[in-house]
Amino acid sequence: MPSIIHRLTIDAPAERLHELVATASGVQSWWTGRPVAGETHVGGRLSVFFGESDDPAATFEIAERDPSRVVWRCVQGPGDWIGTQITYRLQARDDGGVTLLFSHEGWRQESEFMAGCSTNWAAYLMSLKSGAEGHGFRAYPAGEVNRWA
Image 1 (cartoon, rainbow, N blue to C red):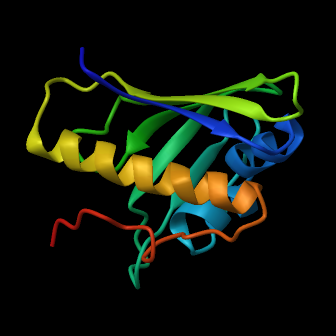
Image 2: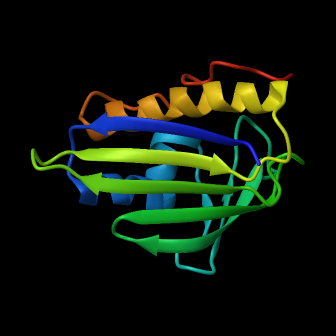
Image 3: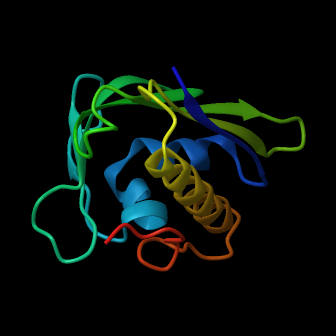
């Protein structure tokens, strides 16, 4: 099954990165720009919202959460996302920073939509990097590169 993968070097402590990918307020800061609803413990569900919609764009079940790995499983959202898994692997570096290995796995097939999602994930991961390093976040809509409407 096809996957989206990205690797980033981030000059921020692993604890800071974990907070940004494992908490609702963290995800809001670099990705959605709107409050994220739900619970962030394993088995909890997070719903993300974009634009003015009161309906969640996607809902994720928290499958794993430890200091070096956070895994979300999509249970509601775009049809191509249902059943996919988003993983953030945090590898501490000797210089105090982190290597982030990101994957969005389990796509049924490669598609134009998948390619657009890969582009947007890259943009939002750069928002995560920028904010974690103290240069400001670029959450939606500022970070959006590829639009579907």
